Image (cartoon, rainbow, N blue to C red; front, side, top):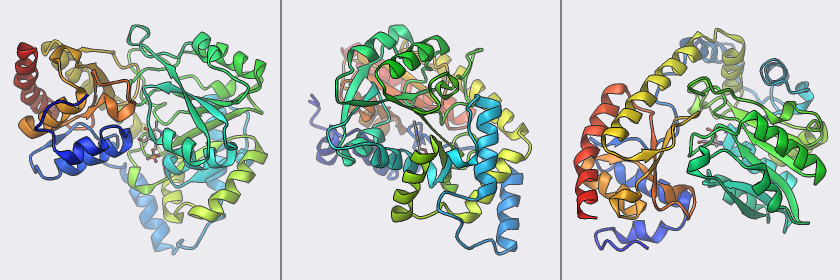
Length: 394
Ligand SMILES: Cc1ncc(COP(=O)(O)O)c(C=O)c1O
């Protein structure tokens, strides 16, 4: 329950809807020019120069017509090659559709996959766009709890216990937004066996795959035996290459599923923007040094934020991947939505409350590291007195 009368009615009104709440807080933060946005999930880093050059070249050559709905054949093939070489997926270009961002990809997956009443197992906390995508296709979300003590890894026995005759699919987001947890290979192997046993589809969102820390490894469930006919893998260019505004993602799945998705895509946006697809092609086929530099930068920022949170005596789950610190704020004694609002209003730091990622997470904050080291340090200094004050009052 949000009790603080200072929380404005427009924030209260959306408090129960994770996605709306996040958008509302972003809107409010726009009122404060000096706000430091640690809410964002889109990289702040510049798109690598060779990708920009490829767009300029595509424009210069007037490559401005439509591609096929499923995407440029050469991009589909480049994605398939990447998935074979890096992820071990047994795919060709026919198994790939290029989407208008991962966001469209997840929507199209649910529209294509689900019949009314179908259940999808969704790890909690979660990127709540999946809630809406599942519900808009008439499906039902069944939450699979994950725990701080287990670094928010997914537990196969909890997945299996949630299966009913209506279960259609299990969703895996690794590394996870919001927790930064990863689903480890041993758990993925067990989940793959469960999926085969119960004839379930596995949807693997691997959009943060390139950002894993401390020696942890990303593993793709789609590479395991028996997954060829049941794995749907979603990924994109927004996070890996700092290309969020280009809006390019991709999905790999059995050919008949890709064909069905392509029909739905034709009705919604048609093909992804052609010049963006050329940018994506350059990202995959060009030098990977800029990505390695991104990885180094995020690892450094992660350390800075972990140190800052330790200094504030806030408990967090050490992120094994992604851009986020999933931080337990229960020791402040106030609801995370209230705390987020106050951190913004008093501290000019935008941080999303845990309730932006599921109703059960009023004792958590999601802090993203998508700002410069200087701004991260400044944000930590702004947060310290506020956290200390509420904790003392508690
Ligand atoms: C888990 C997850 N999947 C998919 C997306 C969609 O990203 P985009 O549409 O930029 O590719 C996001 C964006 O934040 C995300 O966090």
